[in-house]
Image (cartoon, rainbow, N blue to C red; front, side, top):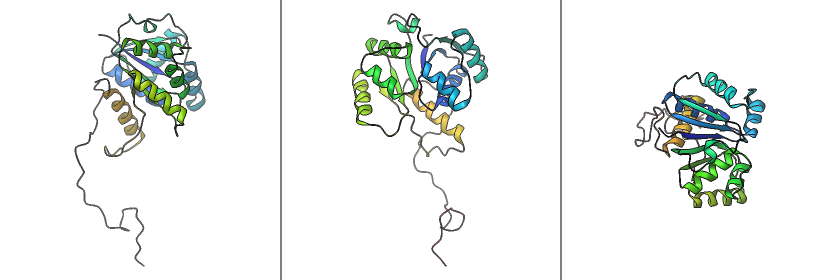
Length: 219
């Protein structure tokens, strides 16, 4: 079974990457994972987690974080451009960068590969393999838009983690699952149950001012 590459760059929304890895391993998928130096810093700054740099230690770390012993996981050091995923002869089912910083986006769009995340993305583009980029930034400047357009023109799919409410999320975990599952829909993966759009929901709504949260204008 050819693996999927899961790349994590130094943008906010790292829990999306953790949940993606967990769902992939629970689905018994093979994962080649690379966490950028910036992402390691974000984990520490936002969540207080120290992600090891060494591949073997990082694999143990992710296994503990996800609580999942199934699937296949191989981690790579952020700057190891001799890794298998840095070569076009290494076959994969595709690559997802989740989340993708705008610095990473800009360098990939320019053909610059300073680390393994960017080199692996460059390989997927040149080999014509699926590359899904999940930019996590708002608002987008004209520079961002042009870089993302260049990547889309080169064959990448742009899938920003944008939430929806039609699946009626009950908490943040429901929202995270929706975002992750929708991203991997692009690659044809089925990673979990998701309430998909089936048309408008028919429901009895309370009158304004009677439990609906809308203030009544009546005196």
